[in-house]
Length: 73
Image (cartoon, rainbow, N blue to C red):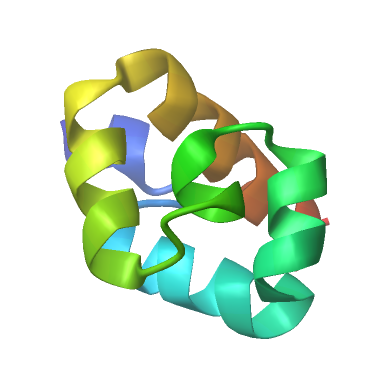
């Protein structure tokens, strides 16, 4: 298992850190234009975003992919 994780740029990074870093880097408005989900455009808070992303794997995947593209390329 450790072998498969050593090349994973998200290994050891919490969803809260991912959302917080993206929000700090882009701001809510830009983040909402990059990923069209309501918690980034209307109900803008880390807490509401985490609640939504934990329930919606497709949205979490988009956020994780943006994080990797932004900070690990």
